[in-house]
Picture (cartoon, rainbow, N blue to C red):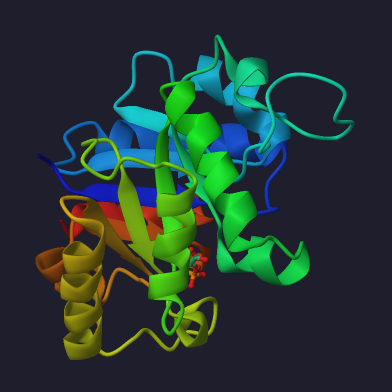
Length: 226
Ligand code: PGA
């Protein structure tokens, strides 16, 4: 299985800058050895589906409604994504938990919705909450033996700070996650750059990258390290 590089744009980019990113990135990463995924804001998913058609990049959403289609103003559910090239859903990101007060139970409900829709969840977790985050997923009936689950270990102190986490510590937590969750892929996220991506790729199943993925040139540099 090839390792993952997920570019999380968060609440950045617009149609014009997204087009420029794609134009710069696609020709430079066509021979990439890793599986490449980009997570734009919801508003850019439809144009991105067109821009990435026949490319080796797939799309992720940065969130998903915990509900099915219905009267939930402002929510984007899996049904709303049918027809778009969405392969993954980043769920329970610490910024969602912090700024939007998402609970472990809500994250678990979102994971269920993604699985029902055939979208692969990338579930963001952190210490010291691994056990309770895992428990909420178990209680919601998430089956970890499914091969399409990815867990992202994202230590809060490393996200967007330029202070990537200690490799030894990341390695330990990855083993702990694999023990607890079973046979899931585990990626690392937090201040990944072209200078450190090879180290994190060596001890994990891939990386989730924010800041260093925003500029096309910087994302290409990341991919070229692998
Ligand atoms: P960062 O963000 O690469 O800017 O630290 C990572 C993330 O939030 O997933």
